[in-house]
Length: 318
Image (cartoon, rainbow, N blue to C red; front, side, top):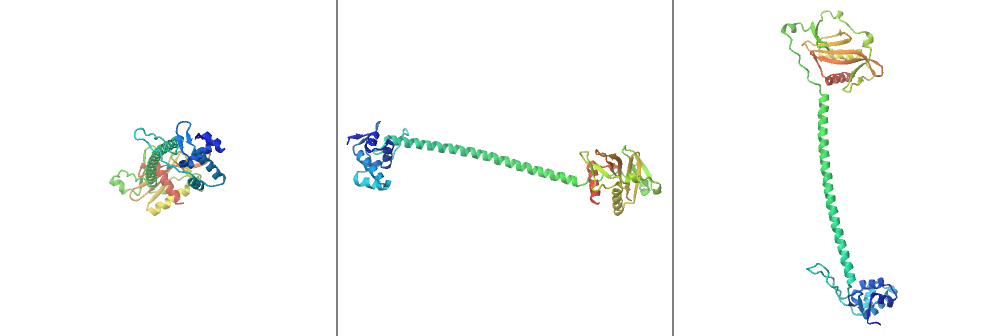
């Protein structure tokens, strides 16, 4: 056998590839002695016998552990020293006996890649945590906004469901109170106040049957017509008002006409009054209806919201 071998020489001697010889070295470092570490790396003459024995053991189907026992019985095993780093440069020192310089370089290259990968993973984790904090902050703001919207919506519903307070009409003069049961003041759409005597109710005017039998409607905030299920006529609506007035102690109800508008008036013994203004009109579909367009409470015009709530409460009593 030759005095020294390279990877190529050992591969030719054993009839295997250079990669296989390098694999032998990784598995059995202490049994393949290195002579020089220049390029190409040279091995002592004993390396040829060791590689031949490894090839034969593997050819017989032995495992790495079994082959290691055979080599230990036939050859001397040199101790394997792990690579060390210098304090000054941080670079690996010369490879110890039994470990090739090439192996050491690959080892440290792999270790460097692992460290870079870990650093990249830490950076990605930090960015992910930042994004998570942003998402959590956005969710908190969204929940806070939703809570505010719910509060505002609840207040709006309460405001719509609670009828406005009645507007207090100016106190009548003492002599007027004495005649409260006989004289009623009604304010027209133009603001004019008219007085009517109730001593002779049989002489008061009354809408025609055609007008009374026309379905009643009201307009919402979007100027849309809203009626009553079943197309309730004006007479049915007024009948409900009259029944409620009787149960509430209202003493008088009567009709009054002001041009094309019919006004239904309800008065109570204490001088309070309600006046509902009705007019004939047609819907966009061409249907003839009676529109409740205004409500005066104690001589003062109520708001559109109060009028809509008043209409809804009467409708609920059908």
